[in-house]
Image (cartoon, rainbow, N blue to C red; front, side):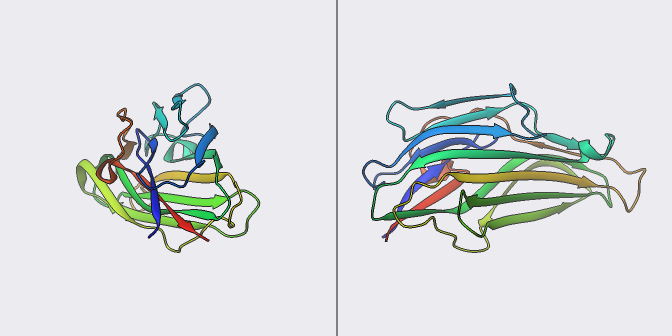
Length: 202
């Protein structure tokens, strides 16, 4: 049975490990960058045992009343993960939370994509929201394919979260999306994971 490492989030929240994580698996470092998470707008901490990364971002939102750059924002996260010999891992499911205020005809798009440094291919999850909408949202689903890291290789995990709003159908219509930035706790519970990682033996 595949073991699981759980990524819970503020924007992305906390990366946390479940009970059967392989020995010596640990998070060693992380970096972030992008219009949705400019340097200095995030707070992150890796736990002493290396099993949890907690992140909180404060500036990740898009709106139709901004220029094109403000209608589309992304955040790129690079996580250095140590994986022991005989194991591989992948991102499994994703859960997205936030608030959307969209007039009729305005559309919003969420997309999450991940890949491993030095390895070919990527896997993604996306969902579209259409107005009228004025409420909090929560979406969940699986990535479009099972993309594992190379066996026993400690490849960095890269994932990109992108949010867009589009009012091309009616330029007078307004819309905005705020990605949830509530802080998260370090808890080993799948129900609180916004991104889940699956480990599997090679």
